[in-house]
Image (cartoon, rainbow, N blue to C red; front, top):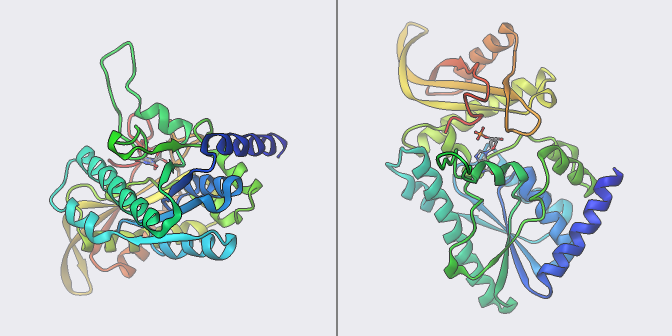
Length: 324
Ligand code: XMP
């Protein structure tokens, strides 16, 4: 793609001009955006970049392995893999308000990065002056308060809004002008494997915002398994690339069911799938009933702790894509 080749060259020049001989830390979330940002920055400044992948305990199934494989083995880009799940899940215990969850996660991300930046400096690599993020154009506008009317923030995206002043780090956000489909084209341009480029978007706060109410390890494990079965069904039906984003949600209610000759009292899984071009508006995906029925059966048979499955038929607006 000619336009993206030009964008790539220009972005590399801009990154070099901004960063100079400084050190950059890039947070990877497992998503396409942060991966593309990291690979682009690595191309611009090589080992002045350190990538940090924070496992906050709310990732999709096998996500950690996928990211580590991609960076260490496919690209040979050094990667610091931090298991911070105890810290995140500990601080999120008892937190049920969606904005409070997002803010807690945002704050902890900053803490973890700050600690990693100090470690890197202590290794004699020099202090990190820049923090890189895969912020896209829609992230920027959805987090901005609208002018003209009452000030409204729809959702505070954990990765927008700048850094605490004490951190003394500047942001590098090379994708700030791009929409998702453009990031994918850029990713292909940078040699990202198709299976990775085509992945559905995944929010920074991860499964936390797909688990309304209190988050526990048990609930996250159930959700991760249900989500994996759902995505497998979608791939097998050849629908993955027709859908902008699909995921499971674990509802904070248990309902009664019957299995074999016993009564069950287990969680409800909600399934979400939407079509969209930029995530700003979306339509629910019209699966056929047979697909939904077969998927519900598989989830209930394969995932312990779930005895009921529902499908979300809300478009955006009025619903958002995520449930929180
Ligand atoms: P909503 O739920 O607002 O989501 O309709 C629109 C798109 O944005 C993703 N999303 C996020 N991505 N950090 C991110 O990196 C976030 O905090 C965040 N919140 C939502 C969501 O998955 C969808 O693709």
